[in-house]
Length: 257
Ligand SMILES: *[C@@H]1O[C@H](CO)[C@@H](O)[C@H](O)[C@H]1NC(C)=O
Ligand SMILES: *[C@@H]1O[C@H](CO)[C@@H](O)[C@H](O)[C@H]1NC(C)=O
Image (cartoon, rainbow, N blue to C red):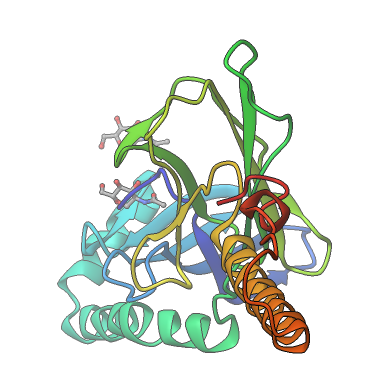
């Protein structure tokens, strides 16, 4: 089982009882898992007496273990008891098969909304800052990485923690300090349980192509109008000679093309 992941701990049962002598015993039953399909699930039953752990059943070991002389004997007896062992096997199967189903059914992953932007305009002297933000996702576990020409980079990268919104959803912001080199492709990669595969978001430097399409479209329309006006004037004058056609500078005032 991967301890790198945060365990999602489900409390199935909590038993408590006390006697008139103020002795206190309780048992904790847990199904611990971090994967959605439950392949790594561990079923755990722990018995405490006066808050001391007396014995436990751990499905990885597949047997009861006692921690005191008397519970060691009890554990040995239980481990030889076929009915008890069958029951533990059945409970372990439920932990592996059903609990993760319940978990994924109750708490469906929520896909993040990704925003990629730059903070300062990058010039050749001063490094720019790219920010890749993921908003409103669940569960908390997420991986935001940067690729330069398809290769993961870890230098010049900083990130916030996963910040809780307070509504079960989280956000995270990852920063890449970079000096742009021409032709280099910078990508923010986001991996999350809500995605089938890692999602790639390419940084579009300088201007964005959507604006260029609008500029080309507008320029085309303007050019058509100019020709129409010229044609109409020439037709009215009936002299096809001298009209000066506006230069293309008029059409592309910001050199966007
Ligand atoms: C269960 O047993 C395995 C194998 O010995 C061990 O790695 C794991 O930590 C145990 N789990 C708990 C919660 O004690
Ligand atoms: C537990 O058993 C061991 C060996 O059988 C013995 O040496 C020890 O004294 C016992 N402890 C208690 C608290 O009875």
